[in-house]
Length: 157
Image (cartoon, rainbow, N blue to C red):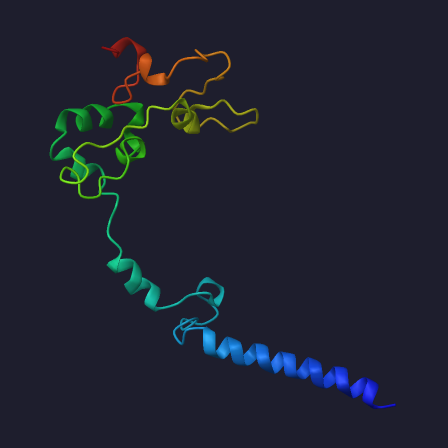
Protein backbone atom coordinates (compact mmCIF):
# COMPACT_ATOMS: atom_id res chain seq x y z
CA UNK A 1 0.00 0.00 0.00
CA UNK A 2 2.86 2.38 0.68
CA UNK A 3 4.41 1.82 -2.75
CA UNK A 4 1.68 3.73 -4.54
CA UNK A 5 2.64 6.83 -2.52
CA UNK A 6 6.42 6.40 -2.45
CA UNK A 7 6.95 5.69 -6.15
CA UNK A 8 5.48 9.01 -7.36
CA UNK A 9 7.26 10.81 -4.50
CA UNK A 10 10.62 9.34 -5.55
CA UNK A 11 9.88 10.13 -9.20
CA UNK A 12 9.08 13.76 -8.29
CA UNK A 13 12.25 14.03 -6.17
CA UNK A 14 14.31 12.57 -9.01
CA UNK A 15 12.78 15.08 -11.43
CA UNK A 16 13.59 17.98 -9.08
CA UNK A 17 17.15 16.69 -8.65
CA UNK A 18 17.51 16.39 -12.45
CA UNK A 19 16.27 19.95 -12.98
CA UNK A 20 18.60 21.36 -10.30
CA UNK A 21 21.56 19.46 -11.76
CA UNK A 22 20.78 20.70 -15.27
CA UNK A 23 20.45 24.25 -13.95
CA UNK A 24 23.80 23.99 -12.19
CA UNK A 25 25.46 22.81 -15.40
CA UNK A 26 23.75 25.26 -17.78
CA UNK A 27 23.58 28.58 -15.88
CA UNK A 28 26.84 30.56 -16.11
CA UNK A 29 28.73 31.08 -12.86
CA UNK A 30 28.58 34.87 -13.21
CA UNK A 31 24.78 34.94 -13.47
CA UNK A 32 23.25 36.88 -10.59
CA UNK A 33 26.55 37.99 -9.06
CA UNK A 34 25.19 41.39 -8.06
CA UNK A 35 22.60 39.97 -5.69
CA UNK A 36 18.85 40.31 -5.45
CA UNK A 37 18.80 44.09 -5.67
CA UNK A 38 20.18 44.27 -9.22
CA UNK A 39 17.65 43.62 -12.00
CA UNK A 40 15.88 41.01 -9.93
CA UNK A 41 19.01 38.86 -9.96
CA UNK A 42 18.72 38.21 -13.72
CA UNK A 43 22.09 39.55 -14.76
CA UNK A 44 25.27 37.99 -16.14
CA UNK A 45 28.40 40.02 -15.30
CA UNK A 46 30.27 39.00 -18.47
CA UNK A 47 27.49 40.42 -20.61
CA UNK A 48 29.03 43.87 -20.04
CA UNK A 49 32.25 42.72 -21.70
CA UNK A 50 30.28 41.04 -24.50
CA UNK A 51 28.52 44.33 -25.28
CA UNK A 52 31.80 46.26 -25.18
CA UNK A 53 33.12 43.97 -27.94
CA UNK A 54 29.96 44.45 -30.03
CA UNK A 55 30.60 46.86 -32.93
CA UNK A 56 28.88 50.23 -32.67
CA UNK A 57 26.18 50.72 -35.31
CA UNK A 58 24.82 54.12 -34.35
CA UNK A 59 27.29 57.00 -34.17
CA UNK A 60 25.14 59.95 -33.09
CA UNK A 61 24.58 63.48 -34.37
CA UNK A 62 28.13 64.64 -33.53
CA UNK A 63 29.57 62.09 -35.96
CA UNK A 64 27.18 63.23 -38.72
CA UNK A 65 27.98 66.90 -38.09
CA UNK A 66 31.60 66.38 -39.13
CA UNK A 67 30.55 66.14 -42.81
CA UNK A 68 26.93 67.32 -42.84
CA UNK A 69 27.20 70.59 -40.94
CA UNK A 70 24.40 72.39 -42.84
CA UNK A 71 21.79 69.69 -42.23
CA UNK A 72 22.86 69.24 -38.63
CA UNK A 73 22.63 72.96 -37.98
CA UNK A 74 19.19 73.32 -39.56
CA UNK A 75 17.73 70.35 -37.72
CA UNK A 76 19.02 71.51 -34.34
CA UNK A 77 17.06 74.74 -34.86
CA UNK A 78 13.86 72.90 -35.79
CA UNK A 79 11.23 71.02 -33.82
CA UNK A 80 12.98 67.82 -34.92
CA UNK A 81 16.03 68.70 -32.80
CA UNK A 82 15.30 65.83 -30.41
CA UNK A 83 15.51 63.27 -33.24
CA UNK A 84 18.88 61.72 -34.02
CA UNK A 85 19.99 61.63 -37.67
CA UNK A 86 20.14 57.84 -37.74
CA UNK A 87 16.46 57.49 -36.87
CA UNK A 88 15.72 58.38 -40.50
CA UNK A 89 19.04 57.72 -42.23
CA UNK A 90 19.79 54.35 -40.64
CA UNK A 91 22.87 53.29 -38.69
CA UNK A 92 26.08 54.98 -39.80
CA UNK A 93 28.22 51.93 -38.84
CA UNK A 94 31.41 52.47 -40.88
CA UNK A 95 29.95 55.28 -43.03
CA UNK A 96 31.22 56.77 -45.32
CA UNK A 97 33.36 53.72 -46.19
CA UNK A 98 30.73 51.01 -45.75
CA UNK A 99 28.05 51.92 -46.66
CA UNK A 100 29.13 54.80 -48.85
CA UNK A 101 25.63 56.31 -48.75
CA UNK A 102 23.00 55.72 -46.09
CA UNK A 103 19.53 54.56 -47.07
CA UNK A 104 16.97 57.17 -46.07
CA UNK A 105 13.68 55.95 -44.69
CA UNK A 106 11.14 58.24 -46.38
CA UNK A 107 8.13 56.20 -45.33
CA UNK A 108 5.02 57.84 -44.00
CA UNK A 109 4.98 55.29 -41.19
CA UNK A 110 8.27 56.62 -39.82
CA UNK A 111 6.83 60.14 -39.49
CA UNK A 112 3.59 58.84 -37.99
CA UNK A 113 5.52 57.29 -35.11
CA UNK A 114 5.59 60.79 -33.61
CA UNK A 115 2.97 62.71 -35.58
CA UNK A 116 -0.02 60.34 -35.39
CA UNK A 117 -3.02 61.93 -33.67
CA UNK A 118 -3.97 59.36 -31.05
CA UNK A 119 -7.51 59.43 -29.65
CA UNK A 120 -6.72 59.85 -25.95
CA UNK A 121 -5.80 62.78 -23.70
CA UNK A 122 -2.12 63.62 -23.37
CA UNK A 123 -1.14 61.86 -26.58
CA UNK A 124 0.41 65.03 -28.05
CA UNK A 125 4.19 64.57 -28.04
CA UNK A 126 5.70 67.90 -27.02
CA UNK A 127 5.56 70.56 -29.72
CA UNK A 128 5.29 68.13 -32.64
CA UNK A 129 1.96 68.57 -34.44
CA UNK A 130 -0.28 65.52 -34.64
CA UNK A 131 -2.14 64.61 -37.82
CA UNK A 132 -4.90 62.28 -38.88
CA UNK A 133 -3.21 60.25 -41.64
CA UNK A 134 -6.56 59.58 -43.34
CA UNK A 135 -7.25 63.31 -43.77
CA UNK A 136 -3.76 64.77 -44.20
CA UNK A 137 -2.57 63.93 -47.74
CA UNK A 138 -3.21 60.18 -47.37
CA UNK A 139 -1.57 59.12 -50.65
CA UNK A 140 1.67 61.13 -50.28
CA UNK A 141 4.89 60.60 -48.45
CA UNK A 142 5.50 63.35 -45.88
CA UNK A 143 8.82 64.39 -47.48
CA UNK A 144 6.99 65.49 -50.63
CA UNK A 145 5.75 68.56 -48.71
CA UNK A 146 7.93 68.69 -45.59
CA UNK A 147 11.70 68.97 -45.31
CA UNK A 148 12.61 66.83 -42.27
CA UNK A 149 15.68 68.99 -41.61
CA UNK A 150 13.40 72.04 -41.44
CA UNK A 151 9.84 70.71 -41.11
CA UNK A 152 7.90 73.99 -41.51
CA UNK A 153 5.84 74.06 -44.72
CA UNK A 154 6.87 77.63 -45.47
CA UNK A 155 10.53 76.63 -45.62
CA UNK A 156 10.14 73.81 -48.14
CA UNK A 157 12.51 74.25 -51.06
